[in-house]
Length: 199
Image (cartoon, rainbow, N blue to C red; front, side):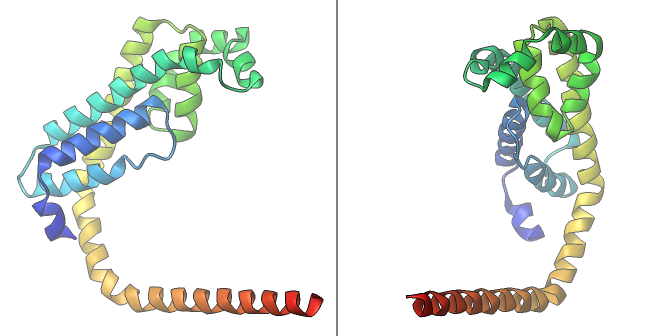
């Protein structure tokens, strides 16, 4: 795995990091933004790119995605359930964003469960654009900065340990998969037999 990661072009890794961070920044859940970060950590260790370049592209992608999500929120809100629309446009949400908006925007860059609602509510509730611009930049820098730096520092070691362990774990994983397959086949056969007897 390490040899394969070392063979990847860092430009493609930066592009992947930018793209996934952009989608994640928009508030789309389930985006695995850490994968290109992990690959970039190995490229940084190999001297093919630098930590500053990785931080720049990842932060830029996350920030621009966040701004795009803010702008799209108001137009997309009309397609969401009425309960979301009422909540996003309520006075309570507006007061919450006015009072804690900066902190929520910064924290939501890292906490996935907050990212989507905060991005939607910020755009839909009319949270001030200059404030969102600034706070989302801070949040993107902290999010990408902390994760990319930790992966750069510890990621290659984790991958090396994984390579050492995968040979030992593979037989157990294959055995577990075989047991699950046999159990599934047995359940299917038993279900088929019960259906035939019922007919």
